Image: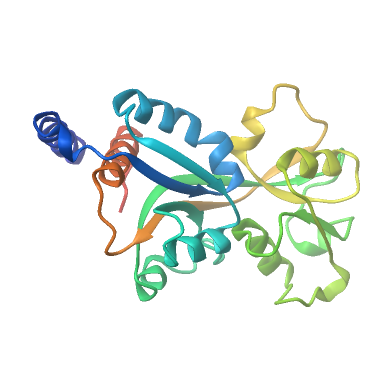
Amino acid sequence: MLGYAQRLLYLAEEARLAMSPEQQPGRLSIGAMESTAAARLPALLSKYHSRWPQVGLEISIGTSRSLVDDVERGHLDCVFVADSSFPGTRDPRPKFAARGLRATRAYREDLLLVLPPNHPTVNRPTDLRIKTLAAFSDGCAYRNVLEQWLGITGLETGGGWKVTELVSYHAILASVAAGSCFALCPRSILDLQCVPMDICAQKFATIDTYLVAQASYESSAYKELLQFLQTAMYSEPGGTNN
């Protein structure tokens, strides 16, 4: 029922814009985490561009923290980010609202703990045979989730853990395959690999990605992006954007 109602709203908006071409927007600046930009945005933005080719899309890549800061300061219109709280501990949307931001759930990501070849199953941090975590720079939500699990707080790497900061998932996965570190990686990124990698991967957590914008921000381009997201969410089995 919700999916049918959402489709009606989509068609109504489509008809309104078709009758009022002057209201169709010309630009939308979007920020995203590297994993979202690589695995999620190409299909979404391809469909978006096919529907609204006159909209100029500008894409920026960053960590969740830096992207939220950019949208809060008005440097970006909207951003795809993950919450840095450990999954299931709280709903992050009130935290965004307290900063004058509106967050809409966009995607649900399975995070995998990726380990060197032949590493045994890990149930707790003490099961890890290596002490180096490969991750993006501080401000990455996935890094923060893993550090919480390891017991790393702030800038202190207690327990002998070390962090190697890398700039891409290709570099992170290559380092894991070489046996020098472990990491967290979205399943959607591993699914993109053309050649199977000699690593071990196990389910770690499920975490949500949100589309975040200033609560007061309104534009036809942004509303259309929300429509695409909501249609995609409702089309998935059991999907919802609540």
